[in-house]
Image (cartoon, rainbow, N blue to C red):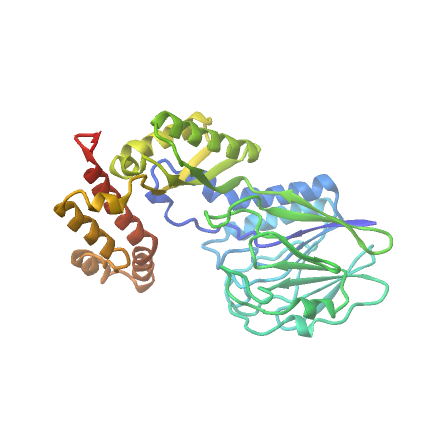
Length: 418
């Protein structure tokens, strides 16, 4: 029997963009999260006395800003070398051979697979052969799996591959291949990387995305970690246990305000949802996006008094304890209780306003001219990002806010129901 850890996509020192826009953001905790998660990986390997580790690509997030990233990784490998734990890794699209320009010699316990062709490596002291190939370039459109060798008889065959399979939402299609391509090789375990959400594709044979070690933004919610795999004497996978490594847990907390009429009840629901998230994170910092949904009489107030509500939500986050929960963003997606059609029949002026609001529903609202002028001097990649955000969620959010405020004003007089 032997055991190994399958990890992928550590993205060491991945930059977290936009944090400076968030007042009170735990910048240092977030920026150091990828390193601390990787330290957790090494700690787990040492504590469990595993026989080896495989890393399925994107160890780095791109070319090193300086040598500190490489020195950090090397230091962790020295820790493993002292315990006799070898590491086998491949390059992915973010740390392809053509991307990383700086180099450091690595300890003897680390083997980096070739980027020119599929390579097979025997694990000393164990009936294991590992087949792998790294990315030579950032974009690899061809099916690398086809050129992997067939299984070596009498050995546990492990395939190490950075791939999108036949395509996954949110990920570029690199080294595409099918499950059948992998099955035909006759391996006992395929350790995959590139897709950041953990997923067991198959258990016969085992085809597994370990996911990344640490979520880096709100689109990477939930636990992130690795697989601890046990192989029995018959050279069959006995288990592939999940172990969380992340130190910051990204969550989207959707809270239903349906029927909520009072601020006290609204804040109770917010506090309860935050408390559940903090408990589930088991001591990790929760980085949360708050999404408020449902049909509620508070709809207009949530938009009109947005600063008040934001402060109240942040206060509930403080109640969870120091460094327990940070609110990344608050999104109001509620609906009004009032009948808009009935409102339009109240008087002629109200009808005109309501109808005009309805007509603007699907219209494209462009950026103001002075903003367009300022954007013209920015680098193209920055300008494209800002324009893309405005044309998507930002534009919709602003339009919804305006609608809510106007409709709320129509239904109230001096703060009282009309």
